[in-house]
Image (cartoon, rainbow, N blue to C red; front, side, top):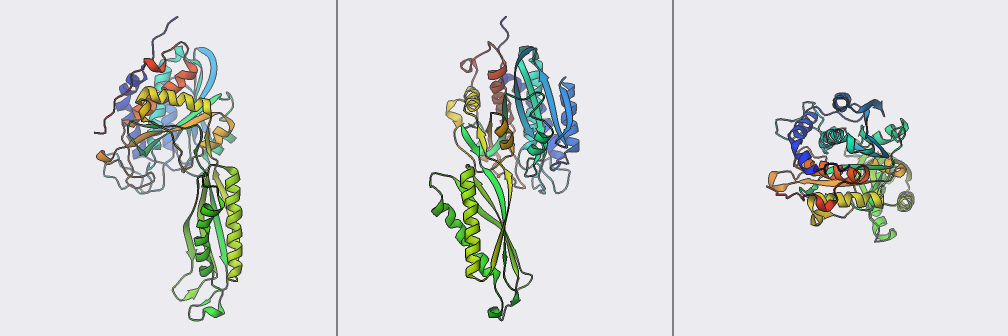
Length: 410
C-alpha cells in the first residue's frame, strides 16, 4: 500500500516555534554533567506525552525513549547530549541563564530541542516505521564520562542498535551547511600532567637550588617539536600546554612545577607515539637541569569514527536538505564521547552549520557569549529525519523527490 511521502522540511518548520521555546527553556535552566535533574525530567515527560516507552536514570541522569514502529525492522539509535558548562553567561537575552555560573555554551540545549522535535515527527509516523528508534538523551558529555556511564547501564542493549546517529550544532560552520565525513570525524583526546621536581631555594642564590622552572620552560618549548619532527606530516595531531603551576612569590625558587596539557589525534598508534616522546623529552631535559620528571595521563574520549555506509546515508540526507554544494567534507580536532558508542555500533556523527556573523552568532563554543542561529535546528531535524527514513521507511520518497531548502544568512 502506498503511503504518503514524508516532507520533513515542512514538519520541521511546523515545529520550529516549539523548538525555539523548548531550546530557550533549557537555556534558562542549565545543569552541568550528572546534575541534569530538571533537564532529564522535562525530557522524560515530553517523551511520555508522545507515547514513547521511557527509561530514566540510565547513566545516572540519562533518559532513553523507545519508539516501536508498526512493522519489524532494524534499531536506530539517535543520541542527544544534555549537559551545560560551568561558565557565567555574557549574553544579554531574555532567555539568559537563571543558574549563576552555568550556561549552555555548546548548543546542547538546541540538541535536546531537536531530539524532542524528531521524536514528535517520528511518533506521528509510527505506522510507517519498519523497526525501532532509540532516542538517547545523554548526560555529562563535557569530559565527565556520560557515554561510559550510559553504556555501563546497558544503553546499547535491549534492544541493541544496528546503527547510531548524532549531530552537533556548530557555529564555525555557516548556517545553511552540513558537515559529514567518512572515517575519523573528531579526534581522540587525552590529558597529561608533568611534574618537574627540583630543589627550592632563594632567588638571590640560584646556584644553591635546582630550578624546576628553567627545566619546565625548556620542556614546554621542546614538546612542540614532537609534532613537526616525529609525526608523519599527513597525520593531524595537537599537543597543547594549557596550564603551568609553580611558585608562591617572586624571590623563591620553587621545588616543583606542574605542567598540564592535552593531546589530540585520529590514531591510537600516533597517540602512543606522542606520549612516548613527551615522556622522553621531559625526563631527558629534566636530567639535563638536574631535575626529575613524572608523567600522568588520563584518556578522555576515543576518536569519533564514522561508518562509511552510515556516513553515506547522512550525506544523501544532507544533500536533499541543503543541496550538494552546501555539504562539507572535513574533520574536526575537537573531541566527543560519542566515539565510545561508535566503537560498539556503526554510525555517523555530523555537524549542522549554526554560525551567522551578520546576526552576531560568531562566538566559538564554550565562550560566555556563545549563541547560535536557531533556524539551524530546522536543518538538523530535516537531515536526521531523512537519514532515519533511509533505514526505517519502506517504499518512500528518494532524495531527488525532496525539495531542497533555500537559505539566507539575513
